Image (cartoon, rainbow, N blue to C red; front, side, top):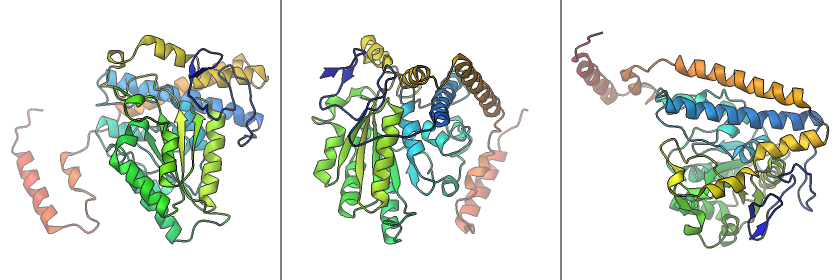
Length: 370
């Protein structure tokens, strides 16, 4: 395995990279980006805010305000880059930690907090934002996404100037699930306009990727009849370029593609996990040298696109957004127990009405000491 200038591992065979860990731009024969100075600064701002909101999620869970939190620390570039690559008409199917993609789709970042606080099932409208609800069943969203993409084909919404495409997010651990491989089969056979986006963060909870597969994630696509590519998942520019190209290809009717975003989960799998039990500190140190935010900051400074005042203002803005989020999370009202019977059927159901009445009587039988 090769080693880059930071001393961190580079996978055998390399990956698409446009921005080094030192913040230097590099050329690639197949992929490139062309952003304005303001767009480069906006990307940095997204990365910082997404990380700060994620940190607030973990803090709230530790303080007993959330039942669970699935963090994304270290994966900000993979999510912001791919999320920004989506066009408005594209549909995204997330797993349960795509908070960065959610943010780029213009969804209020408080939405997943209701889910992890246990007061709702998510809360946003997938049809409004073209971003489906979080999926807690590992890998299930890839089949949902494939079915949706097949529907796009049937509706004739590919191969046109305003064609549509789908992106499905999952982790390296999900590639061991049957649903993911079934989705690959259906997508390949039916030439579905879908991009499978795997954030290979090296660990499926406590299991390293080497215990799941003898070949890299992106090479799995070969067996299903469509192309795969590996990108430096800590490089937001490369992630954007590869994802935009893959989505454009799918939208034009060229079928599916698998992207392996080679990144690292710097934190725990979820707030109930203790990564110190299964990985060594040196591994984390080597990946921290490839931090996705630090490299963009270094690039902006080297190119004269931002100064200390800009960086300080972004940090202050992120702190303010996180504080507002915290206050709104703490103010979330607890749902009424009987609310679980609402919105089950559009026109109601006699059986459901009977169950609701039975539940109401049971609940009323408890003494209220308040």
